[in-house]
Image (cartoon, rainbow, N blue to C red; front, side, top):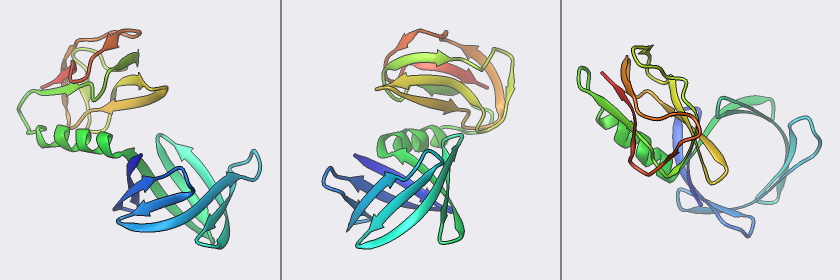
Length: 165
Protein backbone atom coordinates (compact mmCIF):
# COMPACT_ATOMS: atom_id res chain seq x y z
CA UNK A 1 0.00 0.00 0.00
CA UNK A 2 1.28 3.49 -0.85
CA UNK A 3 0.98 6.45 1.51
CA UNK A 4 1.82 10.13 1.62
CA UNK A 5 3.31 10.75 5.06
CA UNK A 6 3.73 14.33 6.21
CA UNK A 7 6.19 14.82 9.06
CA UNK A 8 6.34 18.37 10.41
CA UNK A 9 5.31 19.86 7.02
CA UNK A 10 7.60 17.69 4.88
CA UNK A 11 5.88 15.00 2.78
CA UNK A 12 7.39 11.62 1.91
CA UNK A 13 6.01 8.88 -0.32
CA UNK A 14 5.99 5.56 1.52
CA UNK A 15 5.18 2.06 0.36
CA UNK A 16 4.54 -0.62 2.99
CA UNK A 17 5.26 -4.25 2.18
CA UNK A 18 4.24 -7.38 4.09
CA UNK A 19 7.81 -8.40 4.92
CA UNK A 20 8.60 -5.73 7.56
CA UNK A 21 10.02 -3.35 5.00
CA UNK A 22 8.95 0.10 3.93
CA UNK A 23 10.21 2.11 1.02
CA UNK A 24 10.50 5.84 1.75
CA UNK A 25 11.18 7.99 -1.29
CA UNK A 26 12.91 5.00 -2.93
CA UNK A 27 15.00 3.93 0.09
CA UNK A 28 14.19 0.47 1.58
CA UNK A 29 14.11 0.38 5.39
CA UNK A 30 13.55 -2.63 7.69
CA UNK A 31 10.86 -1.81 10.26
CA UNK A 32 9.12 -3.63 13.09
CA UNK A 33 6.49 -1.79 15.10
CA UNK A 34 4.38 -3.35 17.85
CA UNK A 35 2.53 -2.22 20.99
CA UNK A 36 4.23 -2.57 24.37
CA UNK A 37 1.13 -1.88 26.47
CA UNK A 38 -2.35 -0.35 26.30
CA UNK A 39 -1.07 3.21 26.92
CA UNK A 40 0.06 4.19 23.39
CA UNK A 41 3.63 2.91 23.96
CA UNK A 42 5.24 1.06 21.07
CA UNK A 43 8.51 -0.66 20.29
CA UNK A 44 10.05 0.49 17.03
CA UNK A 45 12.88 -1.47 15.44
CA UNK A 46 14.30 0.58 12.62
CA UNK A 47 17.24 -0.84 10.66
CA UNK A 48 18.54 -2.77 13.73
CA UNK A 49 18.09 0.17 16.13
CA UNK A 50 15.48 -0.07 18.90
CA UNK A 51 13.33 2.84 20.08
CA UNK A 52 10.42 3.24 22.46
CA UNK A 53 7.82 5.66 21.12
CA UNK A 54 4.55 7.07 22.37
CA UNK A 55 1.84 7.63 19.76
CA UNK A 56 -1.35 9.63 20.27
CA UNK A 57 -3.93 10.10 17.52
CA UNK A 58 -6.17 13.14 17.31
CA UNK A 59 -8.41 14.05 14.37
CA UNK A 60 -6.51 11.84 11.94
CA UNK A 61 -3.12 13.22 12.90
CA UNK A 62 -0.54 11.57 15.09
CA UNK A 63 1.72 13.04 17.73
CA UNK A 64 4.77 10.81 18.10
CA UNK A 65 7.16 11.20 21.03
CA UNK A 66 10.57 9.83 20.00
CA UNK A 67 13.84 10.46 21.85
CA UNK A 68 12.24 13.35 23.75
CA UNK A 69 11.00 15.11 20.61
CA UNK A 70 7.36 15.43 19.58
CA UNK A 71 6.85 14.81 15.88
CA UNK A 72 3.57 15.64 14.15
CA UNK A 73 2.64 13.06 11.51
CA UNK A 74 -0.23 12.91 9.02
CA UNK A 75 -0.81 9.79 6.93
CA UNK A 76 -2.94 9.64 3.78
CA UNK A 77 -3.24 6.94 1.21
CA UNK A 78 -1.63 8.07 -2.04
CA UNK A 79 -5.09 7.88 -3.63
CA UNK A 80 -6.65 10.14 -0.97
CA UNK A 81 -3.81 12.62 -1.38
CA UNK A 82 -4.39 12.77 -5.15
CA UNK A 83 -8.13 13.27 -4.56
CA UNK A 84 -7.51 16.02 -2.02
CA UNK A 85 -5.05 17.75 -4.36
CA UNK A 86 -7.57 17.59 -7.21
CA UNK A 87 -10.24 19.10 -4.96
CA UNK A 88 -7.96 21.97 -3.94
CA UNK A 89 -7.16 22.80 -7.56
CA UNK A 90 -10.85 23.41 -8.24
CA UNK A 91 -11.38 25.49 -5.11
CA UNK A 92 -11.33 28.89 -6.78
CA UNK A 93 -12.90 31.71 -4.80
CA UNK A 94 -16.40 32.56 -6.00
CA UNK A 95 -16.84 29.38 -8.05
CA UNK A 96 -19.08 26.50 -7.04
CA UNK A 97 -17.12 23.64 -5.53
CA UNK A 98 -18.46 20.11 -5.71
CA UNK A 99 -17.26 17.82 -2.93
CA UNK A 100 -17.37 14.35 -4.45
CA UNK A 101 -16.93 10.85 -3.08
CA UNK A 102 -13.30 9.81 -3.67
CA UNK A 103 -14.43 6.16 -3.57
CA UNK A 104 -17.64 4.17 -3.26
CA UNK A 105 -18.87 3.84 0.31
CA UNK A 106 -21.49 4.39 2.97
CA UNK A 107 -22.27 7.86 4.32
CA UNK A 108 -21.86 7.62 8.10
CA UNK A 109 -22.60 11.24 9.01
CA UNK A 110 -23.43 14.54 7.33
CA UNK A 111 -22.43 17.38 9.67
CA UNK A 112 -22.98 19.97 6.90
CA UNK A 113 -26.38 21.59 6.40
CA UNK A 114 -27.66 23.76 3.56
CA UNK A 115 -27.07 27.45 4.22
CA UNK A 116 -24.27 26.74 6.71
CA UNK A 117 -21.11 28.86 6.50
CA UNK A 118 -18.01 26.67 6.45
CA UNK A 119 -14.31 27.30 6.74
CA UNK A 120 -11.61 25.46 4.83
CA UNK A 121 -11.05 22.13 6.59
CA UNK A 122 -14.51 21.85 8.18
CA UNK A 123 -15.88 18.30 7.98
CA UNK A 124 -18.79 18.10 5.55
CA UNK A 125 -19.38 14.33 5.22
CA UNK A 126 -18.00 11.22 6.89
CA UNK A 127 -17.73 8.36 4.40
CA UNK A 128 -16.95 4.74 5.30
CA UNK A 129 -15.18 2.61 2.74
CA UNK A 130 -13.31 -0.66 3.26
CA UNK A 131 -13.97 -0.44 7.04
CA UNK A 132 -12.23 2.96 7.28
CA UNK A 133 -13.94 6.26 7.94
CA UNK A 134 -12.86 9.22 5.82
CA UNK A 135 -13.70 12.81 6.70
CA UNK A 136 -14.43 14.82 3.57
CA UNK A 137 -13.58 18.44 4.32
CA UNK A 138 -14.34 21.81 2.80
CA UNK A 139 -11.59 22.75 0.32
CA UNK A 140 -12.22 26.47 0.95
CA UNK A 141 -14.36 28.90 2.94
CA UNK A 142 -17.92 29.31 1.67
CA UNK A 143 -21.57 28.52 2.16
CA UNK A 144 -23.08 25.06 1.73
CA UNK A 145 -25.58 25.54 -1.09
CA UNK A 146 -26.63 21.89 -1.45
CA UNK A 147 -26.34 18.66 0.53
CA UNK A 148 -27.11 15.77 -1.80
CA UNK A 149 -26.73 12.81 0.59
CA UNK A 150 -28.10 11.56 3.88
CA UNK A 151 -26.67 9.39 6.61
CA UNK A 152 -26.68 5.63 5.86
CA UNK A 153 -26.82 6.27 2.09
CA UNK A 154 -24.55 4.30 -0.26
CA UNK A 155 -22.64 6.45 -2.74
CA UNK A 156 -20.56 5.80 -5.83
CA UNK A 157 -17.11 7.13 -6.63
CA UNK A 158 -17.23 10.73 -7.96
CA UNK A 159 -20.83 11.21 -6.82
CA UNK A 160 -21.41 14.82 -5.74
CA UNK A 161 -22.12 14.94 -2.00
CA UNK A 162 -22.05 18.65 -1.13
CA UNK A 163 -21.89 21.88 -3.12
CA UNK A 164 -20.20 24.99 -1.71
CA UNK A 165 -20.56 28.50 -3.13
